[in-house]
Length: 567
Image 1 (tube, rainbow, N blue to C red):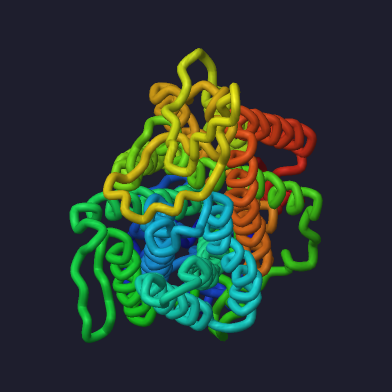
Image 2: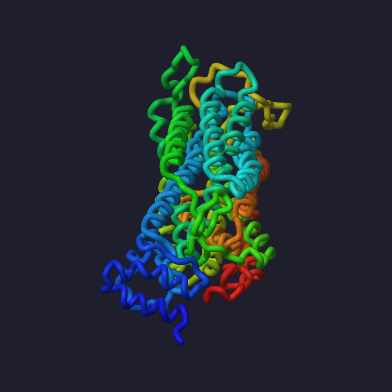
């Protein structure tokens, strides 16, 4: 006697040439056989029969949105209509854009924060710079679990629109931090914290994409998210570099007390892009959720008829793998936050660049790293199919270690000393230097070089420009690999369970890293110099490599762990 699967295969052959009345009888036959899966529409049948595929029982491995995922690899039934496929991937693309805007919100001013801070509040030092940069991540760390929890129980459009609205308001606030007569540095600190809070929607974005893609699609989709994030890092510094043409004075609109210059124009542009993002969310974005096979599920965020049910939620997630993934992601973001924070002060100290030069040249360098990262993301989508995510994560960490090792100072050439804050004092037969705050406010030439108040400037060799650029290339290669592989592994470890809160926690871990990283590097770099800074980072990366080797076998997909899909 024929079973349901035999009839499915027979119908597939018959329907290739069957007239319309025969295809319409498909629903009736399925009801008689009472299959486990829910019957499909005529449109779904016709979509399936239109595909020229002779290997019906084998798994279809679509790794991106190029073609609809038509059927389950086990039952052979259609899992998605063309309309669902189109709506699902357009919604995912809107999430790509949201991720892009989130990264732009951080990177568009990152190279100019230090000179802008010095301009609006001369009392700010490099230690306070660390707190300003960290405030962004602190705000994101607080917001990510909240928005993630929100997205688990309500339509994702709600936390997305609210978070982007906060981002828009904070970007406008940043453009006005120079207006108050005093305490300007604290206003900048508050503005950046609010920008970070609005960027907490990263957890919503990643949880949506993880839940709206099958297991075979997820690595590619996560790579695309990271590519758009990298694109934001490219265009952010590049836009900032272009806006240096406006100059520090710029144009003032007295009616609204707004000064548009090289420091404020980028944040205003970020606010405008946020408005565009909200419009797209209302017009295009729709809720979708699929299991690891690609079958559409009833979303926890909305009610939908005709969706398949799943009992995967009954099986527990490997919490050791979850915690390990969060730890590794913390380390990855920690060291990259250090790299971002240190670039402008390091180049100003080592190469005697002015504020404008540091912003412009580092903008070009970071933009180039972003281009490199996008190439890496494209390559990762291909290479990961053959090697898997874990080995790529290990290789990425090793590459980052080499990048920071190269940054260690060596040789007998020392940086130029900035004497602005030093008063020469002679006492009897000895001459010594006494550190003192300059009281002169009539200087017309911007002082450059390594500040004499940093004692290590006198005995630490410079980091040669060739070292700096080589390190940039290696870190730009290793970081994107680690980022996308860690996120991909994490989403696969969680599996079909609601990922809003889980993604909130890993985003919070990354935000904590971005909070502590700038503070750490500002304190260590200011007091001990680049040798201690980069040496300690090498030790941190080495410890994360050892941890990865210990938990290597546990970092596998949920469906693979429970035997639902063969690895």
